[in-house]
Structures are given as C-alpha cells and as structure tokens.
Length: 279
Image 1: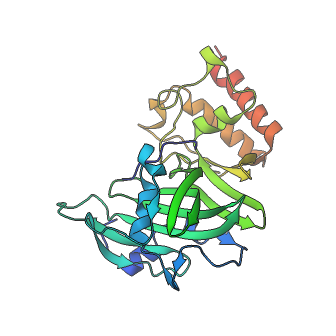
Image 2 (image 1 turned 90 degrees about the horizontal axis):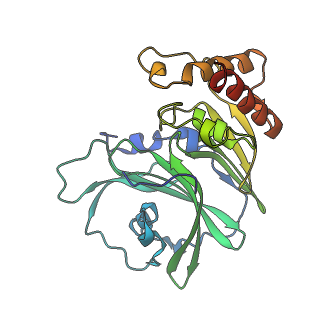
C-alpha cells in the first residue's frame, strides 16, 4: 500500500451519490461471473459491516461477522442509486455534522489469486475521497481482510480504471510531481533527492499523471495535465516546481505523454540535470 488510508459532500441524496466519483466507478469492470460471496441467503450482506474495511491501523485486519452488523455509530441517509456500486451516505450518530457527507461504496470485482477482490470508495466527512482495491477471504459468514493492493486519497494514490479480466488485474493510480520522480529507477539519490511538499508538490490535489499497473507492477506513466501552468502564489511555494513544470510542458510539446520505464528514467534524469544541478 503506497499511502496510508485515513477514513475522513452536503447533499445526502441518491443523485449526489450517483455523481460522487464517476471517474472511478464507471471505469470499474470485472469479467468473473461467479456469484458474489457478499450475498447471504439470497440477499446482499449489510454494507454497514464492510465500513470496517475503511479503517486505518491494526484493527483493519480484524475478522468481520457478516451476519451481525452493528448500527450503533451511524445513521444511513440514502442508498446508492448507481447499480454498479453498493453503499450509502450516512451521518455519525450524535455528531453535530461533518464538513462533507460521509459515504461508503463498494463493488465485488471477482476472484483474484485465491481471494475475493473489492473496489471501495469512502469518505468520512473531511476533505478525503478515498479509493482502494482490497482482497478479502469470506467463509461461513466471516470476512477476513487480507491485503490492500492499492489505494489512497485522490492524487495521493487514488485508483481508477480498475479492470479484472480472468487472472489479470489492471488499474491506474493518480500521481503527483514528487511521485513521478520517485518512481524512476534512477531517481535522484539521497542528498539530491527532492523533498515532498517543500521541493515538489505532493498533495491530494496535485494530480499530474497516472501510473498504469498490471498485477501490482507498474508498466508506464501517462502525463495527464497537458496545460501544466504555473500558479501564482502556489508554484513558488516549492523550490523546484516551476522547473519541473517547464520540463513537463517540454515533454507534452513533443507529444511525449506516454512514458515507459526508460522514458520515466529519462524524465527523472532531465529533472535532476535541469532543476537540481543547474547551478
């Protein structure tokens, strides 16, 4: 798992939840036609049970009894109107109100490497909009979390275009300027390495690329912000961001927006030469 997952808008309606994150949900596909293990006695399990999968920390791995789902802490406001995703918006019981409407959505993708695979979207009421791919085991109404294959908050590792076809899992993961440089095999070393948040943007709203994965191995990077303009009062907060943006625009101008591993290494080296060692 590349980033820590933290369970953190105000229109509690079916229309809202359908339009929540179309860039994610509409690109989630599966080809496994076996019945979902999240159907018990012909009915979907209570989704409240699954909200535990959005927790952070060691308790995330605790087994979940799908036949007993406690509603003590939350009040469900509306069910998802999107047939591709199961879930709801909710409020915390006794809470004075959150910044945004909390929500939890999931979809069973199929069987992958001996485990059931779920795609999950959730937000706990703050600014975070989390997406993740999780593997779980389900036996005798007991769900046991196994692993988070990928996930994060928007540009900090958020996943989309998730496709499970047979035994092959492909997906895209949002990336920041810092991520692209750190991804390279020949990224700047130790003392020369740029620092996130001070040298380069690395926030949850700093999407500049998509990392393409197949079975947990990244295969290429797609530059996703062709304009990539400097922003007054923002870009200058980061010591190497303006230089990075200039290099980024150069690659776009040359139509070099789909980068394989060699091209990512070339981008990182050019960044090192032009931005870190220019003086």
